[in-house]
Structure formats: structure tokens, C-alpha cells
Length: 391
Image (cartoon, rainbow, N blue to C red; front, side):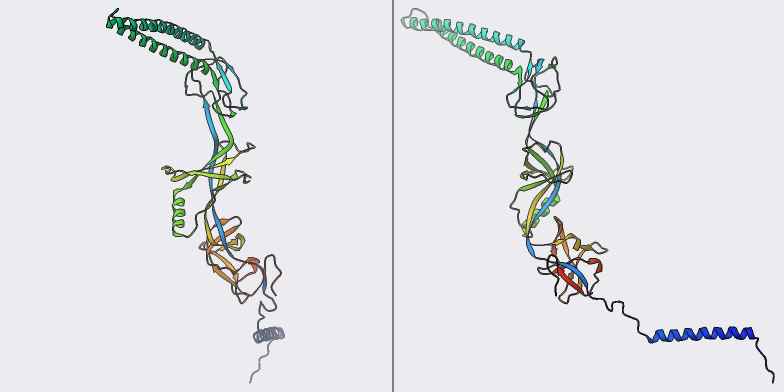
């Protein structure tokens, strides 16, 4: 029998390797024998803040954009032609109805007025002569001193003289009107803009270009457009009883910087025709403007009351989340004090809340705070916002 001997260095390596394998096996067996600790062990329910939702009457509002316009607008134009002698107002100032704004050279019209007066005096003198003659002939014809034809001619001459006087009076009145028109007056009260002419300019009667524009901005119109589809949907919902007809015609005006105009306006009318180009219906609201803060041509938005839901539920916006498909949902606290996902249907925002039309009932506890710690079916400790935590 032959015996082989292993070198000492190799025997040491084999011994170290066997030791490591044995230690690893012991650690593996130890790990298999011990139960993995529960990650949730020792952790209590998550603390969350909830709101208890209730049904209430909710006014539906719609925000629509538009532009402001003056309550009254008048373009000042001359009624007679001539040379502008002077401008009698300050640009940008407030003018009163009937105030003189321009003076057109009155000389030609004063001459025409004087000529009309002379024509009237001549016609009245002729009328006097014709009347006396007609009266004499009426007496003479009774005694056959003159022929009936002569009397008829005298009576006809009297009527002609009367017609001439009436025509002369009308001409005099027209001349007086034209003379008065040389003073161009303000047709309405309001703020007057810049003048388009200066003294020395030639103007013509009823010319296309206005001399100036007056705008009364004591009140301001806001013309807004609403989609005809929205109008039809609203009317259908009212007819079906889904929402009630709004009893308020108040309108809020939201300025371009986001601030709300302090005075509410009134909805004046809704147009009866649809704009073919845009498919919209025009609404007009009137706002008091005592301080002149609103100016014509401003862009603004109107918050219009469109209807009332008798049993609506409002939920704070932070409580509503969306699934990958975009469907709205909230977390609610069940009777077992566990978190549960609840799909909901939302209609629109009302202030800082969502109007929920389906998926929730009065008394449901909707989680508003602590959503980042909530998992489905996980225990939670709920406290109503503004109240002491539940025991």
C-alpha cells in the first residue's frame, strides 16, 4: 500500500475554505430558522385629517370672458358745413348735454337768416293787400258791382298770399336752425376725448369723421360670450330637473389682474341669435362705475350664476386625486377606521372646492390631510378638521 502526502500549504488552504463554508451554512440555517420581522410591526395607524361632507344648495357659476364698453357713446359731427372758428372744450374733460363744443363761422348762416326774415316781411305785406282786396270784392259781388270771376281771382290771390307767408316762415325757421347749428353742442353728458379738428379746419354737414367722441362711463357694459352648447346643456338640465333655475341675475366682474370688482352688476339681456363665426351667444351685464375705475375696452371676466343644485356636496380640492385614466377619486374613512378609495363624479369647481355629483353621501369622512401616508385598507386615526381627534 502506497501513501501520498499533501503539502502543508495546500492543507492549510483546504482547512480555511472548509471553515468558511461551515460558517456560511450555519448563518443560512440560522436565517431560515428565524421569522422575518413584519415591517409594519410596532407602527400604529396613520393620523389623517378628514371633513365630514354634507349636502347643501349650491349655486352653479360660469366664468366667461369679455370686454367693457361705455353705457352711452356719442360721436359729435357737424350739422352744417363751414370753417371751425374755435374749440370750446378741454380734451378729456367732463361735458354736459347741450354744452357748446365748437363754433363754426356763423356769418353765411346769419345772412341767410336775415334774408329769410326779409322774405317773410314781404310775404306778410302782400298778404295784407290781398286780404283787403278780397274782402272788398266779396262785398261788391253781392250787389253785382263786379263779376264773379273778379271776386274768385281776388279770393285765390288771398290764399296764395297766405301760402307764401307760410313758406317764408318755414324758410326762416330753417335758417334759424342752421344758424343755431353753427354752435356744435354735446348731445349727451360724459367724458369727451381728443378733438380730430383744430380751428381753421373746414367741416361738412354729417361728415363721416367725427369731431370728437363723448362717452358716459357712470355705468359700464360688459359684453360676454357663452358657447351655444353650454346654453343648450344648461336649459336641458333645468328642464330635466337636474338643476334649478337661478333666481339671481347678479354678475361678478373679475379684472385682468385677478382682483374682483367690489360692485356686482346685473345681467341685462341674452342675445336671441348665435354668432355663426364663433358659435356663441352674447350676454350683456351692466355695472355701476361711480369712481370711474372701469374704462371702455378693458378685458375682464364675468362670474355668472347659471343654476342651483339643491343637494350638492362640496369637497376641498386637495382631497380629490386622479387615477391614470383621469377619473376623480377620494380616500374615505370606513366604519372600521380604514382608508378606502372611492371613485366620484365631479362637475366643476366652486371657489376652492369641487362640486361632487356622485360617489359620496352625506356623513362620509373624506381624508384631506395626510394623504401621502395613506394606503388602501390601511388603518387610520381620523380627526375632523377643526375638532379634537377621535378617541
